[in-house]
Image (tube, rainbow, N blue to C red):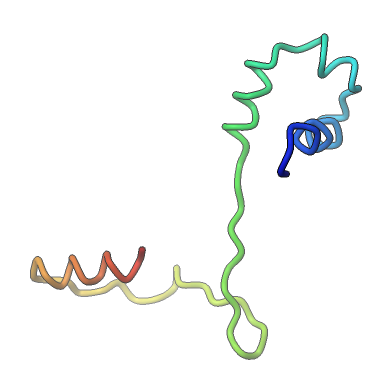
Length: 77
């Protein structure tokens, strides 16, 4: 959504509200909090076969020095 109207349309669709209710029936502060607290999803990267790569199953890294930890964290960002 790139505009307030897109956000409003998504809210109407998601919650089944009327436009009149969105404008006059609920405070915009509550709507803003609902938007901020809404769950987000992130798509997993895919390998060359089109299968999703799940990094959660990778073995944990064995980091023993400060530099190894720093380099590992740089790789995550």
